[in-house]
Length: 406
Image (cartoon, rainbow, N blue to C red; front, side):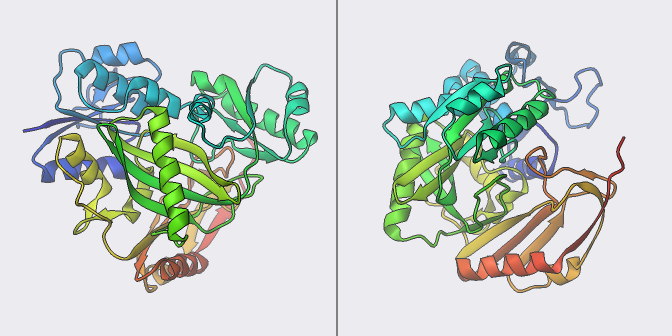
């Protein structure tokens, strides 16, 4: 039996999918997660307690254990997985590459060194004066934390006054985190154009693009909340080839070697501009938009790849698919949703999953890190999939109560 070690921050849907995939492969799966190390196996899953912010202590917790493969879900877990794989001498992304993916400033330098299109950018310590930084910024520009994902803390500024306001807002948010990267923020010239996402996998240094997603909604700021992903892309063959070539160049520039990656980029009349690459698969429930072969989920594909199986012949299932991350329209307390049955019954809709819980305090971007839920659709072409997603979303009506100040 193959022994698999999975680094992950939560015990949600994707972790269960990895466990189910391991069972189908007749492999043993051990979870390494940042839960309490004092309680004796509180979830009954024999997970190894680690601390993603303390690499030495986490590696010590793995001492004496043997595994045949390593996988990771999430940015910080991917960094620890890379360190563990190096110690265990297992194929994965190198630690330096995983760290570069988790640091937008380091990634920008690597893209620049590889001769890729890079906007004007600079890093600012949060302890510095926002007024001084604003005087150096190109306008319009985007301020972003170095180590967060999912557009958290990313704010567009079109003037020095907007820059100073955004700087202070991001600083207040990052003061609540412990990640050393979040002692800084990055300032970049705003890149106009269409935005895309790419899912891929590295096999011993060779990249393979698994899926190219269109993001049909404009993402122009001041915040950048993602909503709809649809694949395959509706761009021309030439444009898709340019995107694929840029992503392949980017992952090699970062030094990614073995395992999944998720890339974000923009395209305009000047070409392809990489936004970032993560050393992990697409996050959360969004992976349900992808199936391979006769319906294999992404988690099983990743585990098969990790244990050395040949997945090169496994392509995407069905003609077209997509997901909508249901945005939070305003902050408040989640109460209820109407129209769920109607939305689920619509043509092309596979499922509508509401992840918000009754009584949950909803926090929109840029501070928030969650969605109301997810809508999944499949169909004969990307246009039909997008229409199904939008129609299902229009059928949903959320009740959000005003949160009382504490």
